[in-house]
Length: 344
Image: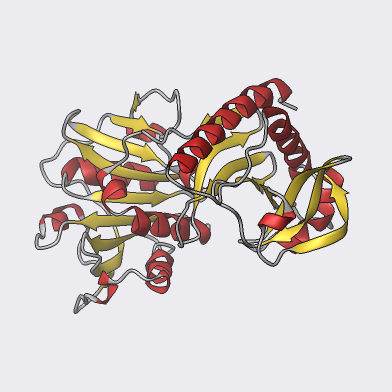
């Protein structure tokens, strides 16, 4: 158990939530959740870590723990006798809270930290810890809007700890259309088969120089219906990425086809080096040969962006990794943005 590492991250998380809480109060927010102290955070991390390694009737426990009192929740399910915050208790009740949006409420009772029940509503900046997989924990809090989204703060996998750098500079596609990109990324990861999506500029056809023709599943009359990227449309597009090959989408979200095979543009040299970055505190930018990025999808995407500087490529791996490839004018090379930590 990485207790020393968890002690360090607990202090950092306490400082993070204190800072955000103070900022929220200055901005007039009156519904900000209480901030757990570092000792409490470490105890919650410890219980969740050990619960993640158990099995309940053969299933991996997946729970979301939210630190706030029952009276601050709207229509909660409150247990007559709170459960002790421990791995065994968390594993036993985990089947009841596997559905996204349901959280186990944790609070400091007279006998120690306890699970008081379940809730769907959380106050602003509530400390939330999600068990995503065995040994994989994600600290987050509500995003503060009506969308129901959460802001990831840290990702802990065993003793490997990643504190999200909120000031990290992300790819242009991410910044300009955060909501759509997040939806696509989450949906592409969800089917578990891995996939590729190429976003090309509208009104041009230079991308065709990097695609093997004929396109297996070309859309004969591209429609603008995808200009409204509802959840249903996003899921439909993400479903197409499960087919072998890449989905082709314009930057105005017009579907051009799917099943595309990427080829090196005639006369263009093979990509030799790619910059890799991750929005994590202390993560240094690396420069690697594209073969070190992953499988064929990553290598093909890197070559496509190397040849098509105005495009971007979204790549989901079967193991859950997610990468956005774009051309970096300042570095004059392909830049791979690893975004796994933001999507868990």
